[in-house]
Amino acid sequence: RVQLVESGGGSVQSGGSLRLSCAAADYAVGTYCMGWFRQAPGKEREGVAVIDSDGSTSNADSVKGRFTISQDNAKNTLYLQMNSLTPEDTATYYCAADVFLDSDQPPCAEMLVATTEEATKYLEVWGQGTLVTVSS
Image (tube, rainbow, N blue to C red):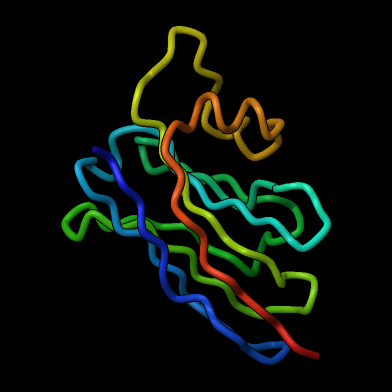
């Protein structure tokens, strides 16, 4: 069955950088929409960045200019390069993948602002999450 495994989280000081990785099993990265989401303590899960099958990307306003989503099809891995981190970026980060193209599938970019229910419906597989902690 399809599995996504995130890694690369950790603790970093404000202004620092981290690169998250999401390794896919039984799924070819680049097939459909994939993305990174995060959930801070006491807050709703939110979209961070998504990448469509054509390589086009979309970022949340809060991370534009600081975070970059990318994928390496040869390594079957999704990445999130995070620079200029701030304490507000502290959260558990999840990668997700659309593994089944529904007839009513919204555009990949819309997954950034989808409700938790919609994101879970259209991005069928989620990783277990990796914690990022940014100290001031």
